[in-house]
Length: 159
Image (cartoon, rainbow, N blue to C red; front, side):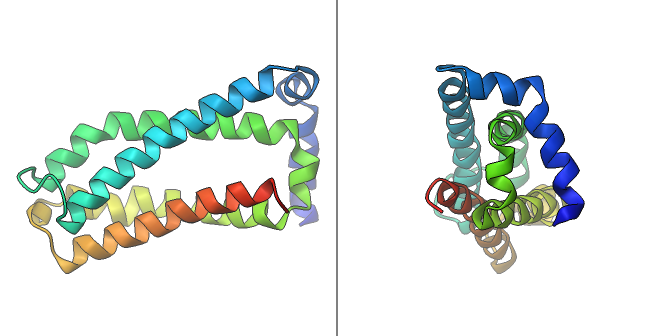
């Protein structure tokens, strides 16, 4: 883990980290933005997941529906990642020894990797017009990964 220590030190010393630690209102503001963007992001993942399971929006073709949600999905993910880094920078050394933080980062890496490879291939495939076992599995894995990120992130505050 000492391999990452310089990154944690650098993050802790950035003007963002220092400003969030010193300000009474800046951390709650960034956290609110983070949670709102996370809600939007998980909403797009959730509704597309429901479509992939065949529970909602059945008349919508999966590839078109995924393309329609993409700007909201990508935009909110960018805000989540940026605001998440800001929150991290404000307490980098707390995160350094936090097992839930490390679990969250592994889950986040796997979720982003899965989202932009396999999941995207399934949702953009023209053969994914109807719900199949493949689309259900893709949705289940996606939801499992993203909610694991959220649960591990929530655990950071308690452990």
